Image (tube, rainbow, N blue to C red):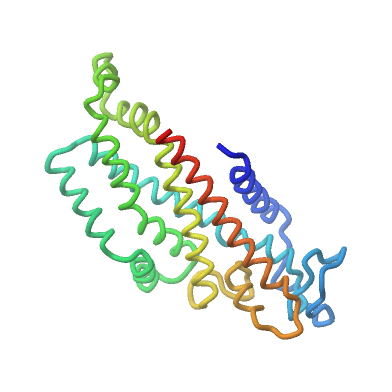
Length: 262
């Protein structure tokens, strides 16, 4: 795998951890005297039109989606892996019922499903993350079910069972971990990138996800775009961050796809 997208994703996680440890108070960091200030040694990306440090808001904004993006991936992995694994392993009528449920949920546009869940349970970032994970379950579950259904009669599966390994151990160790981990990683990277786009879009529109004065890359872009005589980096920096992060996640997922089919 190419080192560039992997390094980008690791760097993103590092920035997120740095933000959590630094604990910079971006809410009270308002100084009209710094409004629209350009980059300097004291403020690496300058300040927005309220005089807030853009660099620190960029760093703190990673809290809005890295942790919640990981939560979305965990939710998707837990449900998609469990249901997809059972569907592929059991076969027969049970598999048909589970895969029919996947098809029913997948027939709804993901954005509509996410907005519906948020309308019922609230628009908190945690709810948004869980909704995104649930919306992606059918895609991951169907992929896992198809892979395991193809492998459940393979020689290594029969050999493991002949040596006394339980069905649960065969499913978890030999199939899900041994033969589906690259497939799962690819789907979760796509989900992580999709969650960033979703969170940024809804924050940009307003009413969902992270809202001012707490920063997210989406609401930073919305808040600063179009401000005349302001600091262009206040909206350009989050826009580039969104693009580069989604690009890195997509490239990493594409390279996992090449490994899987190489």
